[in-house]
Amino acid sequence: MSVVRAFIAVDLPPDLQERLAQVTSELREQMGDVPVRWVPAQNMHLTLKFLGDVSLNNLDVLADILRGETADREPMVISLGGLGAYPKTRRPRVIWVGVEAPAAMEAIQRGIDKQTGRVGYARDRRPFSPHITLGRVSRNATPRDVRIIGDILNIKKVGFLGVARVREIHLYRSDLQSGGAVYSRLFSASLNADK
Ligand code: 2AM
Image (cartoon, rainbow, N blue to C red; front, side):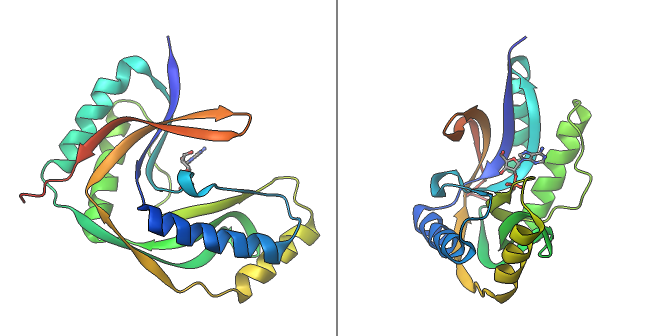
């Protein structure tokens, strides 16, 4: 049975990706040679649901779920700004820029989580916390690396970066290649502009 690694996400417009890439390049310069896998601008997106391994036979079911969760909802606007880390700045694993999303986005995320849960994909254990991942700190980071990263995250100010109009939600496949992850769209569902 063929499987692909897949996730559901919202795209960002190129101008916002560029601004995020600018923040990343400042962080890289300020943090120096710390082991962080920085996300290239073209891979930056807002993840709604990570599915993991998906059987190709299940793609139709997932497309139906996406269609169902978007059909009755209108396009919306999300807003990007602020900098932080999960689980916390002093123990950074994921370095992120924050996302402010309307309640409707959370409702879509919850709906997708519930419906994909019904067909066997693991439910999200944590509440939805919308963010754009800029980088992932390697498990090999030393206490000194971690201190440097935490210090910079605590001092650096990232204000409002811009807004993105969300008209579609995409099912992506992720292929891990030697140069990093390559994402390709498998299916897109449009929010309902006539609502
Ligand atoms: P994140 O960057 O928003 O944290 C594609 O790989 C997306 O799926 C990533 O952007 C990441 O979301 C999410 N992801 C990857 N691996 C994951 C995992 N093991 N658990 C949860 N989410 C994961």
